[in-house]
Image (cartoon, rainbow, N blue to C red):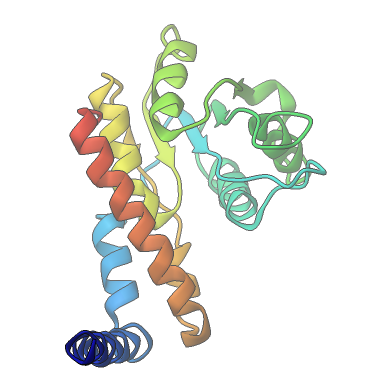
Length: 209
C-alpha cells in the first residue's frame, strides 16, 4: 500500500510538472499562432468565379455561432471585392430549425450579397460531406473555385476537397490567428487545435485526405 502511494505521488508530481510546462508553452510562447499558421498554409487571397464557404456551428434559435459568423462576414467581404459570380454556403442542420447554409446565406444577404448569386448545399454534417455534396452541386458550374474557411480548418478542408476530385484554391480567414493575440483565449484555442489534429489523423486513417 505504501509503495502504491509513492507511485501515485510520483505520477501526480510528474503530471503537475508536465501541465505547468504545457501551460507556459501555450500562454507565453507563439505555439498556438505558429501551429495555426502551419495548418492555414499560404495566405494568397486568390480571386475566382465561385466562392465556397464552409459552415461551423449554429445556435438552436437559428443564430449563427461565432465561427460561422466570422466565416460569413469574411465571405461577404471577399465576394463583394472580388469577381465571383456565385457563392456557395455549405452546411446541413446543426441543431437549429433550418440549415447552417441557409442561415449563413440570409446573414450574408444583409451584407449586400444578392440572393440570386447564392447556392446552398444543405445536406452535409462534416467536412467530408461538405466536399462531397458541394462537388455534386457544382458539377455543371464552370469557373475557378475558391475555398473559404477558418485558418486552422483549411488544411483538412483543402485536402478533403481535393481528395474527392474537386480542385479548389484556399482562401483562409484569420480565425485562430486573430484570437491568439489575446493570451486569455490561447488555452481554449490550444484545445481546439488538439481536436482538429485528432480529426486530421482520423481523416488520414479513413483515406479522406
